Amino acid sequence: GEDVEQSLFLSVREGDSSVINCTYTDSSSTYLYWYKQEPGAGLQLLTYIFSNMDMKQDQRLTVLLNKKDKHLSLRIADTQTGDSAIYFCAVLPGGGYQKVTFGTGTKLQVIP
Amino acid sequence: GAVVSQHPSRVICKSGTSVKIECRSLDFQATTMFWYRQFPKQSLMLMATSNEGSKATYEQGVEKDKFLINHASLTLSTLTVTSAHPEDSSFYICSALTGRGTDTQYFGPGTRLTVL
Image (cartoon, rainbow over all chains, first blue to last red; front, side):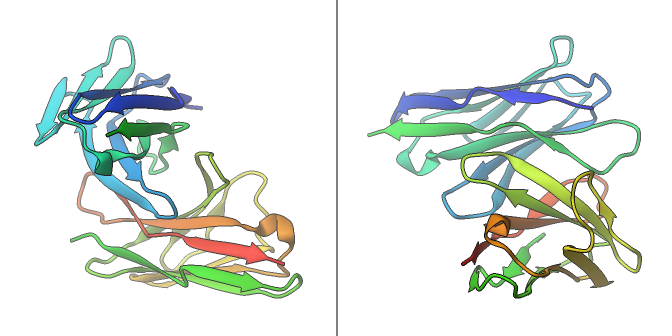
């Protein structure tokens, strides 16, 4: 099965850029997602990228996909205290399956 | 669009009782919904896939007789935790597929279950 790995913790200063990394193992993965989870809440879809894309930008968010290295990253520009949360990367495998595999989650702490 | 609700948001029950959690897609029809369980400081663990009008598909290790799933309509799936025990205490989250081609899951806000 698919393995999705993330670093557990990231701390940045307010106003700096944050980069959250994710690696996966299934090279036939089709869609790759980033979700945000605030304490006690469900998951909020931030953005997603299709596997034939290298980059996607959406306001302060930039997603980079390196298919060769099976590496996905989420960059948050001008990080704000409201960005403090746990960020999950999720990968949808190929083969028509609907089940995604979630990473372990990265806790982002923004220091004022 | 693509809003998913869950009810209740929090529930406390006594050991041995059953608890029903509802997951609704508010502005779309969801032929497929998923139920996850999340332990503190951990990732999501998929429990089952729920398809409208058919039996749910449970993941390995998940007791289907304990976690009853019903997907009676295109906007509602329910998870019933039967004969709950303290070890069933967890955060339960549902998600739904919109069927709009991206296979993107939209998540509900979660239900915190505490079994005393």
